Image (cartoon, rainbow, N blue to C red; front, side, top):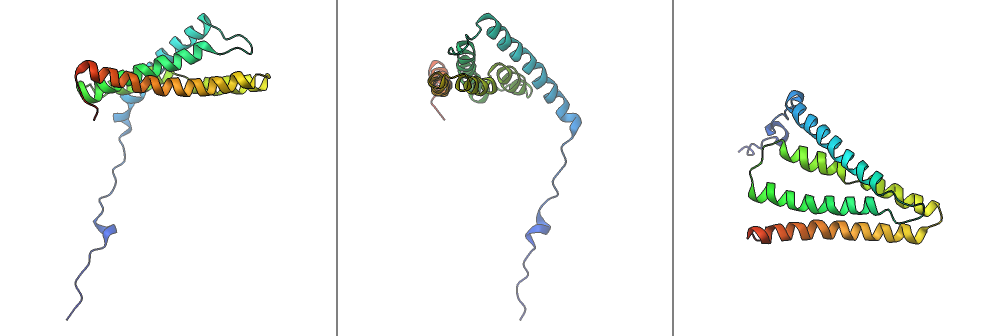
Length: 153
């Protein structure tokens, strides 16, 4: 009597396919274009409403909160309502909104406030931005679902 034959699991796995770089070029291009648009809008907001030394960085705060709210609406629309073109999400979600929201500037602002002797303002900014941004995305997605008469998945 012989032992039953067992297959080698490694031999059965298909060879992973290398991504075709030419297929990714349009995605990279729309992310770059959208990022340029979003970053330009953020920069304009910072010029329009500059932060005072040691003061609360309101322009960056509201940029992040509004951007997160728009992300909440956008994600509900493109994942639950609308079958969007494959480049819409990278262009608007990753590009425009990724360039518009600025959590790197948020981190630099906190560090600057602490280094300049305003640790309470830095801590308040840290907590307020995280709380407001997360609340904004949650409320915006919930409000969008409610407006459209959809239940949360």
